[in-house]
Length: 156
Image 1 (cartoon, rainbow, N blue to C red):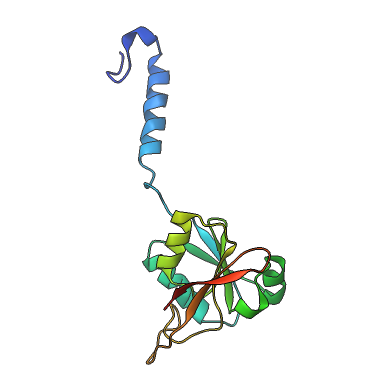
Image 2 (image 1 turned 90 degrees about the vertical axis):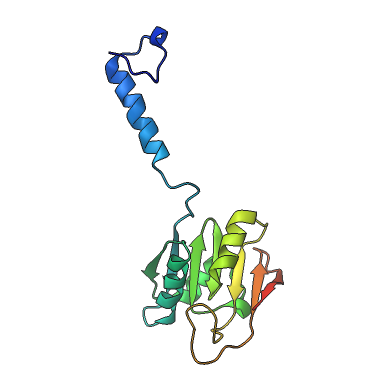
């Protein structure tokens, strides 16, 4: 018995036809253009980091959390400029996201693939993702490269 998907002149065995159909089914059942999974490196005592990871998840970006005892070392190794540092550092799709960067800007970077190392929201501004509260302050999202050059990527 031959499956109608294949040309009878191919002379594939039924076993091979079933294997090919199963492989195609597996490929086509994958989520289309799934966002890359990321890891958030954080201090064990910070709660707002988990709120930021929740914001990412609500926006379709899966971020797992990993506790690190020496965040300064993590940031030094990844060349996050000292003046841009915040409470957590995430690695998603080959980019760094330092602090409370909004999900829409993470998605924009992943889509546009600019020649930067990542984005940062210095400090922990009230009203940024994960720092929601009764008040909101304006803040900047800053792009940075591996050489330490920076520019304002967005104002929020």
